[in-house]
Image (cartoon, rainbow, N blue to C red; front, side, top):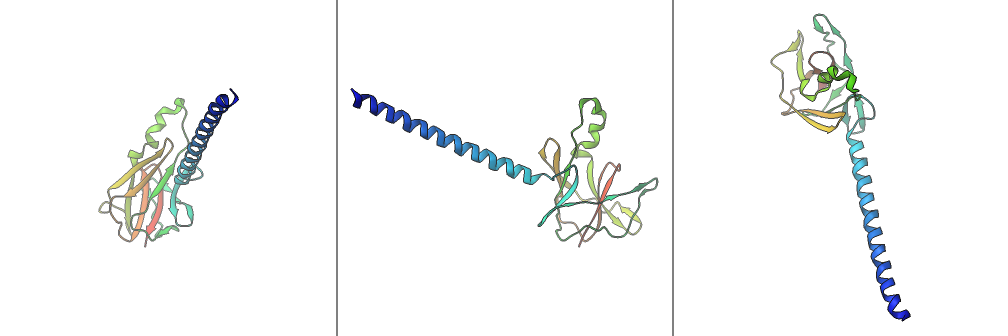
Amino acid sequence: MNRIVAVPLFIIAFLVSLVAWEVRREIAAEEKQAKQALALEPPQAGVYYKAPDGWSRVPPVIFYRTGPKYTGKSPLQIKERRPVFYVKQVPLPDTMAALRSFQSPVVWTIVGFDKSGISSRRLPRIVRTPISQTCFSITPAADLAPGQYLLTNMGVSGFDFGVR
């Protein structure tokens, strides 16, 4: 009788260990996926370029009544012809729903500068990719020519960068 009970107990113990192993494997996969998702998002709210050595915050441009002041050259100079920018936003409460339109990825665009200011000839098509509820990426659909650019959301604010 002991042998008859021992065999089912062994099988039950074996099955429990298989289930535990599978649960640990799934947890490890979920943790890895969460870490990868965090690597896709900048650490704080703002506009970032992901450089090979980590996140680089894109400097904002001051807007005047006549438009953004062209400074000549941004401190952020990028070698990539098709850079990827990340916009991480602070989640807005329901009471501030009117401001959500400014957080929409649709309102963001990239414009080029020439010496007289914003150049209408340099408006590249861009691709917007959602990363999370508060983060999305923006990248030009085609290579950018060397020069100065502004990443902007409906002209409310802008972030200056250059392509070498």
